[in-house]
Amino acid sequence: MKHTQLRLGYIPLVDAAPLIIAHEIGFAEQEGLTLDLRAAPSWSTLRDLVCLGQIEAAQMLAPVPVAMALGLGGMPTRLDALSVLSVNGNVVGVSTDLGRRMRDAGHLFDFADAAAAGHALIAAAGERLRIGVPFPFSMHAELLYYWLGALGMSAPQSLDVHTVPPPLMAEALAAGEIDAFCVGAPWGSIAVENGVADLLLPTSAIWAFAPEKVLTVRHDWAEANPDLTARLIRAMWRAGRWLADRDNRLTASDILARPDYLNLSSELLERALTGQLVISPRGEHRHTPGFLEFHAGAATFPWRSQAGWMAARLAARTGLDRSGAQRAAQGVFRSDLYRAALAGTLADLPGASEKLEGALAHPTEVASETGTLILHPDRFFDGCVFDPHAR
Amino acid sequence: MPAPLRLQVEAATVLADRGANESDAPDPLEPLASLMSERLSIVVVEKDRDRALLIVDGLRASGDHEIHVISEQAGLARRITEHAPDVVLIDVASPSRDMLEELTLASSPLDRPVAMFVDRSDDSLTRAAIEAGVSAYVVDGLGPGRIKPVLDAAITRFHMFQRMRAELAATKRALEERKIIDRAKGMLMKARGLDEDAAYALLRKTAMAQGKKLVDVAEALVTAAALLS
Image (cartoon, rainbow over all chains, first blue to last red; front, side, top):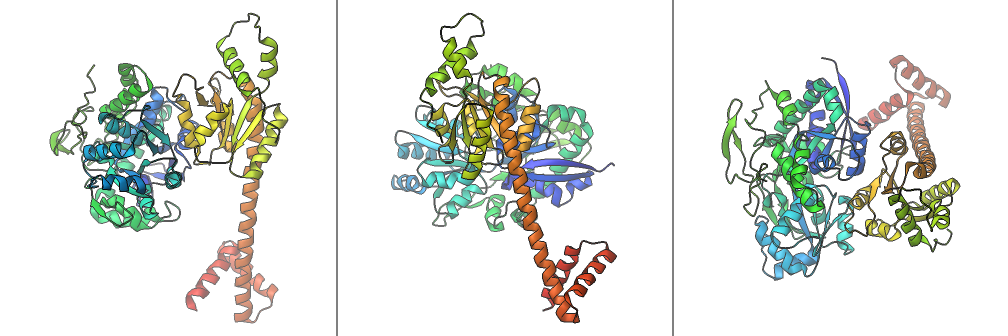
């Protein structure tokens, strides 16, 4: 097999792990790929680097390629999502001042009940709530709009969701620019360590199985390089499977902690990988199973219905036609390429490429190509179900 | 810094009207419009004062523009909308760049949506800008002909910075290497009773024999000595 070098961009976050592990543990090598990993300073720059062909592939916020297919933001280039790199993994945090008011009003910070946490937050916030997110097109933003919207707080009347780069989030909280934030690991834990925030919820409490980051390439690159595309998908799938093994967590956090990757203490990174979070500057612990998934429950399968959900949400808040948006987003999540790449490997593939999102309350067996596959609960906190074919 | 142009808001309105009205019919505002159309409102987002000044100088040379520099990161999107700029320039390496992306979603009919500059007929200018390290956000309806001189000027200045940054890094590295070689030389002089030239010659001979760089041999010696001491 010809050895090929690929340039891959990422943002230094815990959920960049599949890219870093594929390189460090040799899963890329196994596919004859040499990964040239490049940390990017921002999501917009990472997106532009892929679009302009300066890198071949990137870790990307799941809604970005969907938004681009809808003509929202950025470049007029079509990006494809080849696989989901991670599921869940974000946290909602509030300023210590807001946290104190919520505690005084009786909220328990159980870090699990999204409805109770949302009501407490809305009651304590007063007239307006300002929340920082990393990017306008992100699951962070979509899940906040979904969660607080369902509880009666709507944007822009009483909710401001603003972009604040995670490294500046603590500063923005301290300066009173925002009251709360939704960020990926390790930024929530860093805010807690700096004594500026209490963690209120993992986003998995809002949607139990939400696609978070995807592996993206330019559509025309995927078309022109089917073999490289397949090798890349397989390398990421093996890295995800390795990450899902409990025995590898310590090694994973040590590798991610290195100066050339996240350059942070491995203890801080381990919190997200184990789901054992410290939620307040006073050191309270909470354990969240499934806080961040890289493999289990067909986590990396790019369900077309996930793209459909994001398209419907984006259309609703930007005033686009919903069914047109869903049609445009359909082909962005390339379950076809994912299947082709993993056929004949140990990966078990679901029989369908779409599902009702939010319908599973318990781990559920579904038909797969080799028998049955167990999907994880994917409920929305309000019990609603998203049917990609509903009109 | 010159005083900001008072006519800023009016100028923006005229530009927006012209963008919407493609007809060649005589325009009562024509004299004002042609005067104003040469003048672009540009916001430069840059923390480093010296860098900002150099960029502003470069832009000045490209035409008579109204230029504002924003060095504060907090509330960046709001600060930018206050200036209602035609063009926003920001370093692609700045994490704050993501704050500009929400300007692409105009939240009210009065907002002028801003988009990442991409010439749809040919993305070479955008590519050149990104390679030079600058990204440009341009208000809806502003033609590529008007933006090109501004981008060209910005690209030249950003290239200059990249060169300066690279030179600085190279100088720093050379200094580090010199220090390591000096330490290794000192060790050889002491341990083997050599003079400075002989110590250097020995290092060089070893490096050539092993097909390595002089500094790598020196570093190996320094590391080994630290382990043995």
